[in-house]
Length: 457
Image 1 (cartoon, rainbow, N blue to C red):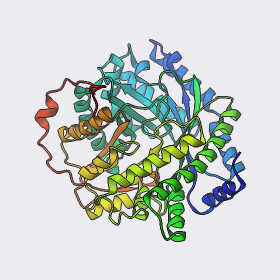
Image 2: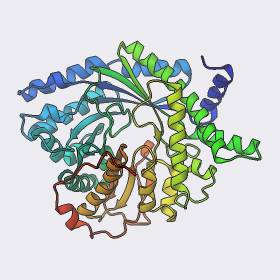
Image 3: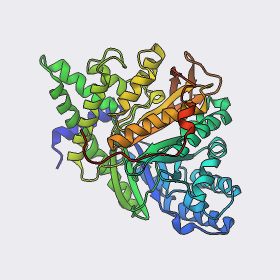
Image 4: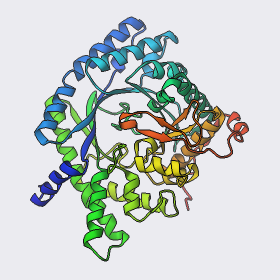
């Protein structure tokens, strides 16, 4: 039972502190739609999605109106599309992608994830077809999002896949030159990809999940910022332990709200409820920023010494509060640092206080990785691959999910900004030092072996 005081505080969060349900994502298993006839396969895919998701948006709107809490995005996540492409030729990729885009528009969702391949140990035929098609698919569809898992703690890092993804990111951005490479924002490269993540671009329905499941992503950086501001203003003696406790208390309340709404959406759809992903996913709005939380915690310039410790405290406290509030916490839960989507982070890059190397260090203790980072447009594919490899190593060694969403914005240089609009915001181009000095390393290819799982120190 939630105390009356917590309910009143939650109402205040809604009114003035940017509390929202960032995403309700309906996962749909499409493996039963596999067929050697591509036309029949595509028809089965569209029919199954249509029948499963036709009420998703209307029910989300009803639940949002009932509780007075906005649901910002309604999304779909399918089982990995590479399975559907096995036994087909390259032409079927675009046929499937256009069908997914069309049915997503028909049921009125914002995005559809699951144009996905898992290649941490190697490529199947369908995996390779999907990866080869990514630049064309993502640049010519509006709602389709892609993800590729190239590494895991158990398998190591597939450097052939890493090198290939460096090239695909570069080409994907180039094909959407007129919008500053935005198509690359719909592509995420993972280590240890989670199977129940409601956030794009990495959402897909993983093995072991139900045939259909509702996962919900709740976001509240503005809520936590205001809670810490109140704590500091009302108490003359506040230490970091008190700050962590306040973040935990606030995360608890936010998670309870998310679970209440997620379970009601699932019940009305007559579909299993999966997880609450409590992730501090910021927006470009002032007051809804993870970077601003760090400033309240005493980091006067984001990227200054102490930034990594501060994000570690924040990430851990969010997870602890969320886990205590629900037995169904999953996904990526914690603190996101997507640069273009967080005004304070983007401003820090523009001011030069937040550099790529410090951002990478911060990703070792946050929920995801190098997210929505805008690179100079002339960054070579091998350097992009090496950046991916570094981030994958952090995830593999630390047994955590890490991801890379890099946008080499065509025609942009350090000092420029790429404007994407909406939740994607705008990102200042970050400087990439030592470009062009990693080519030999990535060209070796092969696989970086899985790390030792004992004798850790």
